[in-house]
Amino acid sequence: MLWVLLRVLLSLWAAIVSPFRPLTALEQTVPLWPPATPPELWLQRVFLAPWERWDAVWYVRIVTEGYQPGNGTDAFHPLYPLLAWPLTALGLPPLLALMAIGNLAALAFLLLFEHTAALDGEPSQAQMASQLLLFFPVAFVFFAPYNEGLFLLFSALALLWGRRRRWWLAGIAGALAVLTRQQGLFLLFPLGVELLTAHAFDLRQTLRDWKGWTAAGLLPLALLGWVLYRSLVIGGTQLDFASPYALVRSMVISPSAGKVGAAHVLTWPWHAFYLAGGRLWTAPDVDLIVNLLLGVLFVGAAVLAWPRLRASYRVYVLVTVLISLSYHTGLAHPYMGLPRHLFLAFPVFIGLGQRVQRSWQRWALICSGFLGSCFLTLLYILEAWVP
Image (cartoon, rainbow, N blue to C red; front, side, top):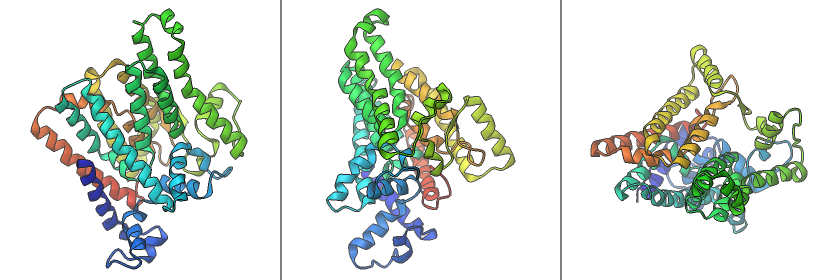
């Protein structure tokens, strides 16, 4: 299976790269070669420690210490570390528990994605779409202790159940996506389109379908539950009632997110792009160049895929891309995390799989994507780029 092969290759690559910048205690004290004793400690150093970077450090802190007021931990939505916590209670190291949840969720998502893609095309096109998604450079995060796999699994379930008119299941899956990442709220738009489509865009009939719109209401309800828990139980995070924009922003993004990195500011996409372009002109760096190149690549893929996408998928892709391009994360790193945010618009690969028909195109994209994944993994391990 390609997923297993890529998992092994990227793990070995991460281990080989890690001695060039050993950041964790295990990397600094346990040599990569020869194998040290005890064996379980050496295995942790080889296969786990190199991945403990950036957000993974915060997830480990949440799993081990819980949420603490004002220290930045409440910037991360709770479902991913919550699912990993029982595994640590069974004796697994926190990083391994996070890797297990994230990797298994990513594998389940890929299987579901191929099934979903087959609903809109031939089985060969669905297989192509799955391979293009897996070998897109940003997909290396599927193998890191990140929540992308879990989020995309629930998002794909929400979209699949929405098109099948199973509203409660779609609403529950969407709510779980919201509890994984705030971008889960974007699922309201495609679910709304599916609900309107089910009633031939008759607004009266749609409003009478109380099951449909009530199920969709589970998504903002999930966010509200997390915000209340963050504010009342964790403490230290206050909602900003200065303006409607400030209130929504303080609900979606914790005010303590600045302790994790540059806090996100939502602006017009052309303004965010202008600020990023100014930074690129005056003080270019690897982080910004990589983000802009991957951003252009993904937007180009979205344009190619657009004519082949279902209406609800188009809406989801459009909203995800526009809001991702609207995030401004400070003058030093104005588009931090842009490729990961764009990658959440996964239906793009369904349309792209229908466009790529020739064998040479397939192998060119897979090989270049694999090299891209290796390059991004290298930057991630060296902490030379913020994914």
